[in-house]
Image 1: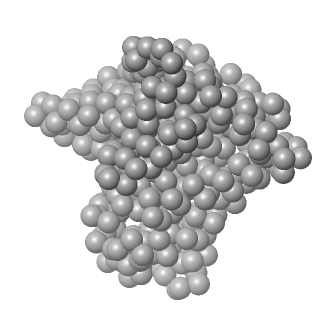
Image 2: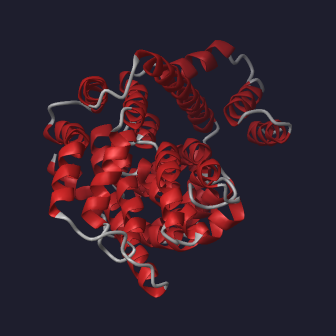
Length: 425
C-alpha cells in the first residue's frame, strides 16, 4: 500500500475516533514512515525536537503572557473608555468602538480568541442596552476579534515563520496595514448599518472626557508603539520585543494601574505555559509532516497537479484564496497552516510571490476563517460572552466576512499594502 495512502487513512480514522488533531497527524506520519525499510524511529523524534527547539519560538510564550497581563491588568477597560470618548458621538459609535477596541486589543494580545472573549464580555451588554440587535451585537466582537492574528504581535505569523523559515520581523510588519484596512472597512459598514437602522450615537462629544480617557489610557496606547517601534527600527528582535512587552505590562499592571496581584499572575503564567505547549506541539508535528512530504515528494506532485489548470501568478493567487476560504469553513486555522504552508510555499515562490507576502495572504485568510462556521474559533469564543447560538452568530457575521475576504483579495493582488513596511525595514 502507498505510504501516502496509509498516512491519509490513519489520519482520517484517528480523527473520526476522537484523537486530537496534532496526535492524529503525528501517528499517521509515523505509520507511513514505518513502511520504509530500515527507517530509524529516532529520526522522527529528532525532526520533531528540531522543529520546537528554536529561539524565535520563545516569542509565542511572551506574547501570550503579555496579552494576558494586559487583559487582567486593567488595560482593556481603559482602551474601551478611550474609544468611547473618541467615537461615541458618531452615529452607531458604540459598534465602531467595539471594532476599534478589538484592533487595539489585537495589537496588545496577538490572539483572536482572547480579543473576542475579552471585548465581547465587556461590550456586548452595553450594545444590547443601547438597543442594538442582539445578533448584530454578538457578531461585532467576532468580526473585530479576527484581526488579532493579522495586526502584530501575531502568534500565527510566528508559527508560519517557524515552519517556512521566513523572517518573523518582516512578517509581523506585513500585517499592520492590511489589518488596519480590514478594521476601517468594517467600521464604515458599521456606520452605514447604524444609519440604515436608525441607531443613534451613544453620547455627545466632550473634550474634557477625551482628555481624561487619553490620560487613563496613555500607558496602554504606548505599548504597541514600543513593540512595533522596537521591531521596525531594529532595536528588538520579535522575541526580544515580546519579552519587553511582558516587562512593560507587569510594570503598568502592578505599579501604574495596580490591578494585578501575585495570585492572578500565577494563574496567568500557568495558562500561558499551557497555551504555548499546545502551539509548540503543532509546530513540532508540522516539522515532522513537512519531512514526510519531502520524502514522498508530495510538494512536487501537488505542484504538477495544480499547474495543470493554473496558468500564472494571478490565477495561482485566486486559487490559493478560494482554497483557503473553503478550508477555513471546514478546518481549524492551526490545521490549515500546518498542512498547507509546506505545500504551497515552493510553488508560490516559483511564481515570484514574496514569502512575506504569501505569509500575509495565508494568515489574513486564516483570520477570515475564524469567523466562518463550523470551525470558526472566534464564533465559539463569543458564545459564552453573548449567549447567542452559532447559527445567529454566523448569520450576523456574514457581511463582515465578505468585507474581510474582499480586503484579502485586495491585499493579494496589490502587494504594496503588505510589503510597504517590510520593504522599509
